[in-house]
Image (cartoon, rainbow, N blue to C red):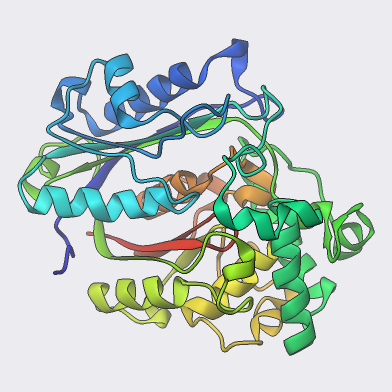
Length: 389
């Protein structure tokens, strides 16, 4: 079944941070309520219009992730006809886009609200470091593998061994992303960095330096989807869901089938086929950048370049402002923000780009954008292709 044009995004909202933290000691529930109100205002709707609620919930981890939809529904005063608390890590929200569009297409709801919030910076926690133990962790945790950085470092080492990828290749991504952040007044990190700065920054887990790693911040975001009929009466022009795919291949890194290929190869293929577009039709991409290696593997898995060619693909600041492959245009998880699970902010930035609302960082004539979420330790992926008009 295709959900192409079955639903449109008509509202997005987020919150401001001060040095990566929420203002005034706000709680996880409060910041999500603020983001939800802003997204609904953006759409010209109210919470009484919402009949579908989508929240990636985590129980019992202070400040990390959010609460399931049943808790958020109570807090917001929303009693939905359709609800979804799918939790597959940072790609949950791209999956929620597909789930919400399918529910709208099936007539199960008309106005879907997708929510996320985290105060991990304020509470000095980390999403994956605080995750509940799993059966497969017995093969990793006792041997000192740091999570999640150690798992991503394994993938980076494998890619370097197999294809000759270098630390300089990874640093290209960090530097290009920082240049986008410098055009975003809301980005957490805006100071200039160079390739050499990345290579000289402290080593976190070989071969990943601290500037190869995402930030640890608070944050909250919300997205509103509606049926085509409801879209006609909303405040902003709709951004249409053209294609979506999702997949997961493992949870613990020791079970990953191939350390150099993520399940974006499957989820991306389905999204492209559903949308009926090719790689050359994409005007910009928003790719989950938990680490620089995440981006490199994803570009290859999505088919923007061949396996092993990611390093050459990003060379010479190709993905930076002024390059011919605009990527992570708000500064990404590496420089904008990363509140535990980042996927909803990829969607928010893509919508704003397609509306032409991004000021200095606006991609000219942006008509089609690709968003890729990654969750766990390269575990899950979901790809959404969005278009305007």
